[in-house]
Image (cartoon, rainbow, N blue to C red):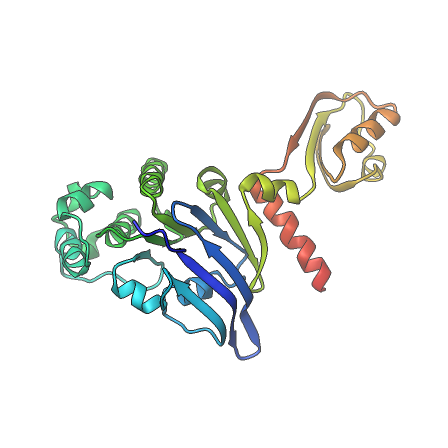
Length: 302
């Protein structure tokens, strides 16, 4: 297993007309990391993956995989990729397609092993064009892991998979990372990023907005959630006027608040003479933190 830096982006830009899809992106990935790439639609995730895989070239800056050009790293078998774009071959069986991928990889695994790892042994004899969406995703995963690649790149990998398949998929990915491989995945399932990733990258308008563990990203959002019930009628105006409240949701007499300073807000609740019951104060989930961070950036640029 290589010890060279897996991925290096150095001040990379990529522009399409007036749109700067990637804007001065600098980042590095290391062996054994599982990294989630997050961002709203149009953030530059797909372009970043295309640059990483050598499918596009940067306008400025450099991209290096294992110290060399991306295309050279791919040809050498360092990279396995599972992308949303591109279809699967028709009129061949699953086993035939996986066998082709194994035969083309410089360091292939046995076909039976690849089928078993992807959980598709039972459909090995089925034609590829007769598969369900979840089964097709697992075939794409098999193609990405047909050989001993040092970096696995996954674009929305569990789309169409049921809960059991998703859990099995991520268990396999953890095994890959434990063996020293780097795993980079883009996803809209933020709960997956929270549960699986060692590191989270948040892109926004082509720039790297946040880079850290899921816990660090959540802490950066600087907000906590407060929920409680009130026995008496709710004075919405008074609640909205509480200090440090960034959002308020009322459902009957259940109050849910997002606050930049939970201690101050709760103290003020009691200061109004209210008697909350079932009081809970929790940190933001990754999804709420992601929304808060990107919304704050949008507000700066508006």
